[in-house]
Structures are given as C-alpha cells and as structure tokens.
Image 1 (cartoon, rainbow, N blue to C red):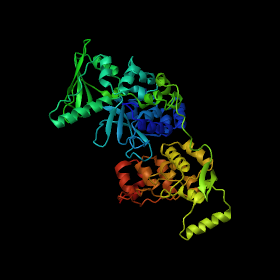
Image 2 (cartoon, rainbow, N blue to C red):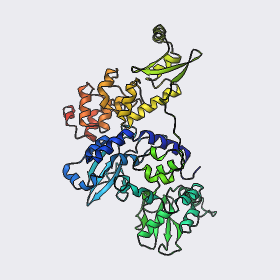
Image 3 (tube, rainbow, N blue to C red):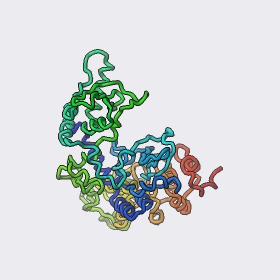
Image 4 (cartoon, rainbow, N blue to C red):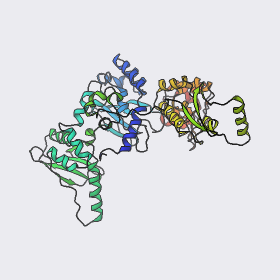
Length: 497
C-alpha cells in the first residue's frame, strides 16, 4: 500500500498502458520519425495537423524531433472511473516562440475517438480549454531529451523519499531533504480552520513529487524564499533557501482567485510519472512501457511484473443445458456446438417471444448491450472496442481476420464504425448499418465530424450513403457541429440553410 498511489489507480493505469497507445502505432510513428517525416509520424499517431506551413515554419527545428506517440503516452487521462480515455479539452504547450505557441490539443469529448490536433496559437486561453505547459519538460515529447525524465522527477535519495512518502511520513521526507516543516495546526478552535488544515495535510501527503527535486528547483531560482501550491486549502512557503537550514511554514493559498506569487515553484513540472510506480510495484516491466520511457525508468523496476491474462487466449466456456460448451470465432460469428436444426428451433422460439438460452443467448448478447454476456466474452468485447477507440487498426483487423464478429457495441452503444471509419467497406459488408446510432443518438458521421476525423473519412461516409439530416438526442445536427467545430469541411456547405 502507498499513500501516493491507490491500488485501484495502478490497475486502471495498467489497462491504459495496454490499450491507449498501441504498440503498432508506436512502431509506425517511430519509423516515420526516424525517416525524417514528422507529418507522417503524426498521421500514424492519430494526430491531425491544423496549422499552415507558414505557422509551422517557426517551429521547424522542433518538429523534426517531435515524437507524437510519446506525447499521446504522457497526456493526462481520466482514470478515476477506470476509463482509458484522454482528459478532454486540454491544450498542451510544447514550444513557445514569441507570441506563438505549438500546441497539442486533446479531443473535445472524452469518451469519443481519441484523435489529437496539432495547432499553432497566438492566444492559448479562450475559456474552453485547460492549458498545460510542457515547454520546460521537453523530455515528454522531444525524442532527443527523453533521457532527462528520471533526473527531472527523482533526486539522489529517490528510493528513501519514496519509502517515507509511501508510509505517509511526508514531513520526515522533507526533513531528509533538509527542510523542517511544522504540521498544519490541529489546535482546537475554529472548526472550519481545523477542517482546512486537515485537508491541507491530506493533500500534502499525496503530493507525488520528490522533495529534493522541489527544493533544488526552488534554489535554482536564486531567491531566499519559494512557494509551493499544495492545494486550494493552503501553500507551503520555504524560507532561507540559500542557507543550510531552510524552514517551512503554511500560508493561505494564493493564485487560485488572487495573484500568483512570483516565487512559486510549478509543482506540476516535478510530479512523478505513473510509469515509475507501475514499475516499482511490479505492475509492468520496462519492456511493456513506451520504448522511450521504459529504459529511462528501469532503475525503479522491482524485477517482476504481472503479465495479465489475454482474453483471447483459450476457448470460451459457456454453461448450456446443464453442460459446459466451448465456443469460438469463425467467419465473423460465434461458433456454437449445435446443429442447424437446433439453431432454427432457437430462432423460432425467439420469434415467438421466447428467450434464448446458453450458447445461443451468448451469441445474441455479443451484439446486444442490454443482454448479459459471459465474463470471458465480455472481456473480449471490451478489448476489441478499446482497441478501436484508441486507433489500434492493426489489432482490430487481426481480430476480425481471426473470425471475430465485427457487429459489437461498446458500453455507450458505439460500433466499430464510430471509431474506425477506415473499416467502412468491411463493416458495411458484414451488415452494419452506416447510420447506426449510439446511446446519444449519434451516427458514425456525426461522431466523425464532432471527433475531428479527416475530410477524406467524412467524405467516404457520405459517399456510402450516411444520412446528413440527422440530429442527436439533444437536437444537435450535423450542420450544428460543422458550424461550431469543422470549418474545413467545405463539402458540407450545401447542407447550410
């Protein structure tokens, strides 16, 4: 157990690392980057470029070393509920040149297709996006600088600090770094103040940063004091930084609704990456991380890792008529050990209002999210849909070629076509309706426009007969999304009233 990382978070991040940046995507993007094609690398990593050649020319020296798959790896994600998706509406500043910034932008909607956008902006904050600054953390995206990651987040006594912080002994960890800090006051009195101080200590215990790194960053600034934003309940202020006996005190939080202290150290730049914890707790091995991350953090590896079960290994066993039957995949359907006569009898029973049982119920439930699916099949369906959501086209094709039914839906009712319009012809040939709607009433075309798909993919859906006059459950039409988000889709001009 660790005060820094809850066990549930480790399990959620293991799922993220399995699906969110597919190995095939990393390999293809790396090959393109090493060949000198940063644009091709972006295409392989699911990054759409929305900037003119003149805008990009200012960042030419930076772009040739951009590893877009590494950016995707490090971007913030929503894991609190077990999701694997990117945190939506984030603008991550990679480089700042004068008043222009090279920015990687996450999707507008979290659960949708995980497409990124590379833009050049003169103004970062328009109220719709949260902004993160990676300009001082080039090791998160610059292929030349990835070796700096470990040194940026860990000091010379990194393991000692981790042991103390795991145990919740954060004040001792800071003392070991050379700073004496009193605990927030627990004196009786104002109950609101007592609550705030307890919450402040709670946040301080969970501050996942090496105190030595924070102290070194503060001293590099050259001033006598430094402020560290712990939470909105308060800040840690350290005095006498340039002496061998600095000391800390707790102050009221500033910079949330007031002015930002000029000596504040940006704590977010020194937070440990989750991969460090995945290694030291044996959740993953260095080989299971991004190849630009695993070797750098390998010194923290415990030496063992949990391989995890592959849901596609071995047959699926289903209880049917008092017996265990083995099911498999062939020709795009679930194969069951029953004769054609038995299948026709079950289909007749269903047509008369009856309920399917055993193997036949499992085959029906694969396509119907309202029906209960056996656990192994549910794991397989989840794996298939997560691969699709995160752009693992090679992985999805491999499963479809092995005979897996392509007409599955994810928990939000979306089909493979909602995530991978590239599979349009194959999915239509398998019987998928091009206008199939998810639980929000959105078709694949609706999702493509809202999710920043390429003009070519949007055109292919329209050419395949996708309706352009549909509205989702809240009344948004394709024209509404086109007007708000996709001025580049001139092919939709005829739809405008």
